[in-house]
Length: 535
Image (cartoon, rainbow, N blue to C red; front, side, top):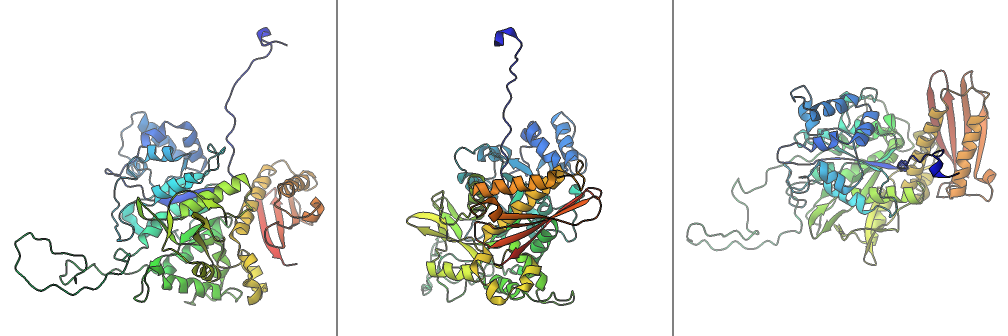
């Protein structure tokens, strides 16, 4: 059969973009001289607008199209929309980001610190994220960016209590990040920048004797950067350090309630004590995390108790602490979250969500600062449980992906002894990432079967066995045969509902996981519960 016969017609279309198993959301500042962004370029991209509208922002998308068609700006919310504030935007490349926010790298922010300067950290994190792209997967969408106004300070990054994802228009930036269906990693680079005290010194000054008083011509520069600051205008204003209890608990409670499959990356804040040669992790922040970890396994405290609640210990698995920051020739100080999140997304895409980034060389020429020793990295990995970036053989790499507490629900923590909770294999961040990916995949499976499945239909079990069989073939589950890697057992359930108990043996590094898959056709609900089995 020949094409010339016109009985065969070719209709060439681009192939569908491969979806990333773990997508990343970054929230931060994109400064500009007039406060606006290139919203007109976004309004002319139907593919990106379609992805934004799918999150529940159809009204914002239609308003952008109307403004691009010539409508007059003046309605309520137009100013924030033209600046693209709090609007989740999928970013395909660093060039795409620079088109939408062309001044983000050049314009200074309002907050300036001695260590970090006044440059925004979100553009740096985006640049580092795409530096970690795996060759051959450049077109895979894996990054979302949410711009927040600088004038709102810390409040722009923190979640609002009792927020619901049912009404996207009234949500803050943090909750809007959770609307991204395939998001598994969340980072707040400019929140980390705001946590750096503005007068924190780099290297301690050498105290020199004051020069003898002398008469000098007007305009003579006598400041040698070492003399005492006696005048009121020369002394840095006193600043109140941000209380860790205002940052960590809201993030943990919101993630556990709305998106238990998401991890938040947060670099330990800096602090400097007189006995320290260089800034070190803030002792107050470490003490706050240690108090939460100390409550692991305890019964939940009452609401009137001012101490860290025991329920926070079970939620601390949603927070992956990082240390230290990065420094290069063109960056006095930069976040490590963009580089680590980019490598996590790239490794998940190429090798699977169950694989760790530990030991893999990170791209770029930046160096960790303050430079950690192997002893300090080991201590931070043990207490409180941080992911430390080191330099080995001239290459930047992660020492180990660690969590503060075992990556298990609170009910499992209460059944474990203190010695069991201290075992390193329970505190693996890659296992937490794998469990979050399993939640999303099983949720998607349940939603596909929602309207065409009855309790007697064998397709759900066949779909589950096919899913876990592919995981076994990919190396995510251990065992010579599939029956050694997982077990699926249907549970008795009420009418219109199906329930399966699934036990899997991950290849890294937990012994067994038990998943309960619940699917209610009449209530239109799909739920996945995860618990661990030791032995």
